[in-house]
Image (cartoon, helix red, strand yellow):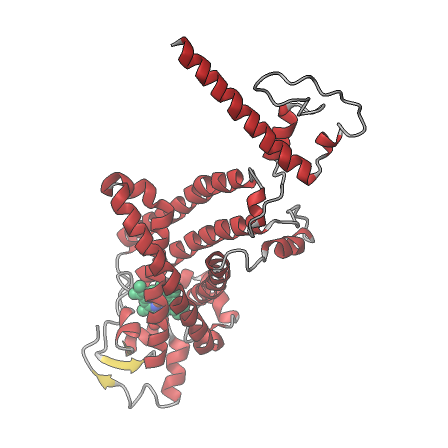
Length: 376
Ligand code: HEM
């Protein structure tokens, strides 16, 4: 037993000595002030004791000073191409992990659960929003084939991105206890591939939607009236003015465009690590408005900010899109047909998009051309 203890303490001593020597190598290479204190001193090396490193290896620096420097990201030299490997401890990584698993994960979950709760309450109180005049049985074209293609390209890819992204974020809490680590790891790996590749379809979708619909999403004074009346969503027989898109839809449109662009940019920088750095420059601009954000960031810190931003924006986007999916399907009679067949009931069009419908009427698009069909 005594022999074993002796071996253990010898091992521990060797380990400590190796660590100190490693830290010293890094510190000397980086020329830390702490270690420079030994310079110019006439230090007499002590006589070597058997088995020990000769001399006063740490000079006037204590272990604590060396480790503090290492802990603060002291960078040494390495001979491999990845120079960042010369940093033994990147303390910002701890901050990143604390943010990711703390506020971002917690508030993200609240946003999603809060939205689901709100929609359930809204459905319980308001029920499905009906066509007040009842379906006319005659339809009019709302979206052509290209518009529907753009929508479903974006929608399907977004749903896949959301599911696989949420799995990466919350899967360890929800799926690991149910499926076990092995199965979860396989699913997460496959999900990651889906996430990476499908992102390009999403990006193409938002570009196409932007080109097709931006002209219909410029805010105007009717939007204020629409908003002041709550879009008529909370009462029967209230139908504020709306062109092709109402104010609520314009908000969705711009949220998808700006949120989608931001997700795409941060996503691409995660996909191609250390190639795109946008946060230091963005922080410099924000500091003009009184913020006090760091403007010198290492490539690794840029990646950490990109990752946090990507998660936070994604959570907000998913919450918004949950509301959109609800109102475009279960929440409103006659809405889904617009993106399904592309044809909507005329009474639906008259109630929800009166200005757009009136223009169609003038152009002869809604009048004689309307088909008599059972409305959905
Ligand atoms: C997956 C289920 C979805 C359903 C059932 C759905 C349904 C609809 C419907 C019916 C419309 C036309 C509304 C109208 O005629 O005025 C629409 C429009 C639109 N959708 Fe979706 N959608 C879905 C997912 C998405 C996703 C994931 C996105 C984007 C990430 C998206 C973005 C849009 C945009 C920007 C519009 C035009 C503005 C608006 O109506 O809000 N949709 N959607």
